[in-house]
Image 1 (cartoon, rainbow, N blue to C red):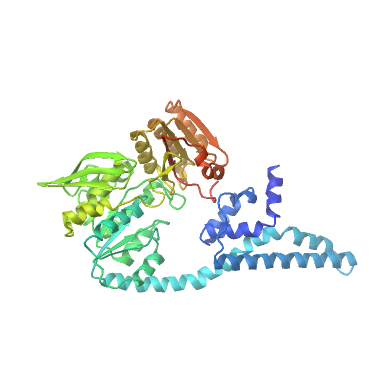
Image 2 (image 1 turned 30 degrees about the horizontal axis):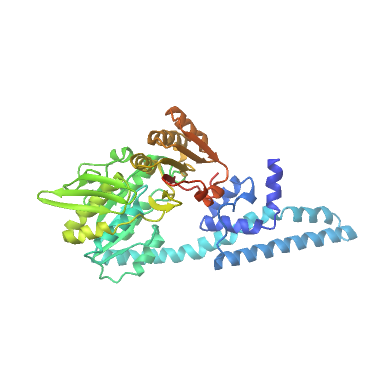
Length: 481
């Protein structure tokens, strides 16, 4: 039955659009596309949650793919006709084979021009632009702050941008654009008059962070933390951590600020690095922490100076990053009033601990991918906040590599420790391990395994009641099983 569904799904009229959607979702990268292709057991379910975005590139590719399929079917039909007429011996069988094989042919053929274009046209252009950006960065007079880590990079960058902009001219890489070509495009937008540049470093393959540092020439570095993430590209967590900490090595461990709260980062921290955590940063001591769905309040004290601060960010885990931002802003010459005003302006980045009201319930949207430290922070926040009924919703975590089973068992334990009244798990390959973690931790609440994530999220308003608190953590992209 499963094989029949697989075969049927390849001959649907929507198959061509499905292939283009898969390419678009993998950012037109041939390797991830082919791996997704091999994993797929039913193409009719690929675009269940999202649809193809009709960009110019997608429309052109879809048109070419459809024309190619039509041409192959036409050739097959001609061969069958010639075979039936007797003018081409074996034409019927050959023609039928050509007709039946079109999904297999074009599933791979569509990637060929992308590979050729990427390797022989796009890559050389990108390398030239990256080489030019190295000169731009090295000659820029401003402070250049690089931000690396398994998680929290974009949020840290946005915090620094929001607060430092109160008294300085600051430019930052946009959104989560954090690879070499993004840095190069960012360099082209600079005027040279900026006081501070904020550069987010992604980690997609071993050596990336070191290469980014050599190109962008940072003067300061922030390492937000290390956790199992992107382990589909790194053989081990240690390999990923070494890549992230290559930023510190580039800077000679000076002007490097590391989040010390998380176990996986501690063994890489040396005495000459500066750490920050929820107790404070750079001599500033945090206290009087208060957390609600409307934000986090706390005080920072250093010597005789004390600042009373209120941020729109949620959770005690935010006190460490906020403390570092305050400390750096103070060192860079911002006034107390500018710092307080900047912290007050900080808000959750999209899908990162972002609260909103729904049918009288509070929903905390933390669905931007995720890792085990994000789970730890989210479950701790859920436990701390007051609500009539607490509901925890997750599909699990992607990119955990060899750590997948261990991480998801631990995830179940963390969820259980938060004591939600109800847990909703989106059914996928990690669900049994989360359930095992819940059971081992003695969770006694209700557990629901949802087979239709799209339907659940679309109709969430029908699921909640006034006074509820719902924590939504992590996303499960279509290209994961």
